[in-house]
Length: 388
Image (cartoon, rainbow, N blue to C red; front, side, top):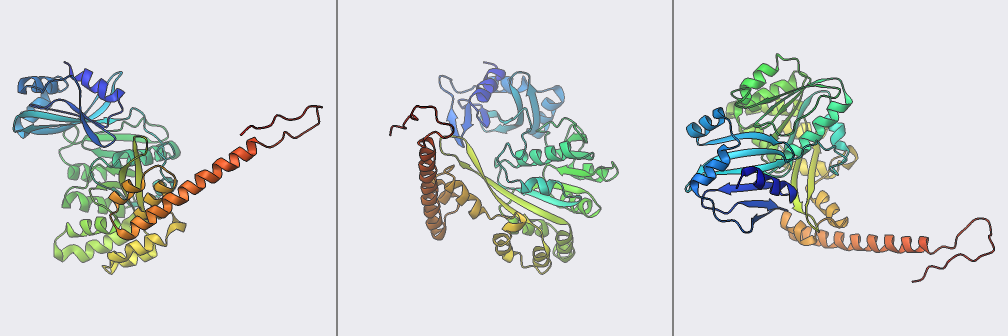
């Protein structure tokens, strides 16, 4: 068995992840569920190490031996590109390979709302894409960066761990830096970035106080900064940023966030009818009302602003999920698992009925159109009747 064979199978089946670990049968994650591969035996510790080490260079092997874990990315010709996490566990080594599409899809191709393109066109400020691990944050950010790349002559600098989507320069100059290979830390790379004449900076993950502080500074000094956090919803995201700082600095940080934050995009993936995943989004754009709520430490009122801000492209998570139900993309049961609230259950049931009614009406309209007599100049023959 070779690791390339397992990765090729994972790519062919459309799996999001391949899991291998000593003492376990190799598995894939498909449509959100783990499935063990058939007709394979559990991997021995030495076999697992051989499979993993076969795609690593000497520097990476040494790093794993010292740190016991490592993130990196690989590309295999004819198979695809993968983000890899290698780790050590009780039975030996293990690794998870996350599939990365070869081509960066546009906002439209992903079925994301056009407001994300307008957010990407902002000249400066902080834009955060948030959600749990595996919710598609990197894919959404890649689509937004791609929109900038094909639209404006700018300098884009990314700092990632590891580099996932590889962007080919179109109208922009693009430099992609990877933690470990090209810089020792997000903070070091951000400090250097301010001297590298960027227009747009992407920070793969804002994981500590220093990185958050530098990202805020960069957004205040005229750069458009994109970042990610593992938070759910705009209020939780803003609270996470402010709470990362000591109590004595939080008032100052709150003012910085109010001035520089431009948008928070929180997303989650739901099981799609018929297979695959559907993306539900909460989008908050920072207007005058939101800035005041942040300054006054009343972020618990932000959901009300989002609900009334549809004219500015804002959408609540509840509204996004209900739209997926109405369009027949996800079931009512899936929707209520995402938002377990009795009132929302009633709304999801109503959305499901509206979706069925709309589908039925569209079908009837289509049948009526197909059954109309042919029009135009008489030919001496009767038009064919549509048999029902």
